[in-house]
Length: 129
Image 1 (tube, rainbow, N blue to C red):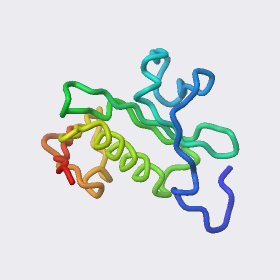
Image 2 (cartoon, rainbow, N blue to C red):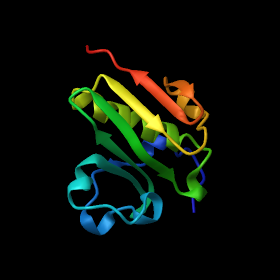
Image 3 (cartoon, rainbow, N blue to C red):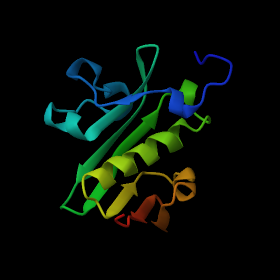
Image 4 (cartoon, helix red, strand yellow):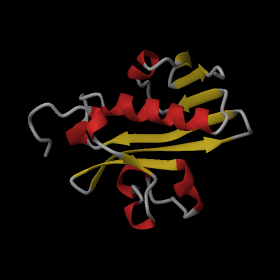
C-alpha cells in the first residue's frame, strides 16, 4: 500500500530492470533480454509499481510502446512522471519525435505535452537544446 505523508512521484526511483524484475504483470509476457534496454520501472519497497517500454523506429522517431501503473498507485502523478521520464530517455537517445498509441485515449498525455492526432494516438515534437 501507499504510505501516507508527503510522498511525490519523484520519490519512486526509476531503473532499467534486471531480468528478474521484468514487469510482465504490467507490460506483458513477451519481454526479451534485449527489450530491457528500452524498459524502465518505478519501484516502491522493492516492488515494481509502474513501467514503460519504448521502441526506436529510426534515429529520430520513438514510440512509447507500452505503459502501466499499478492500480494502487494511480491518480497520484506517477503516470505523468513515468511518461516524462520516457520522453527524457527518448531525447537522450537523439529522438526528435515521440509517439504514443494506446487502445483507448489517455487524457493526461496532452497535459504532458503530446498532441492528440486521432483517438488513442499522440505525438510530441522534441527540439534539440
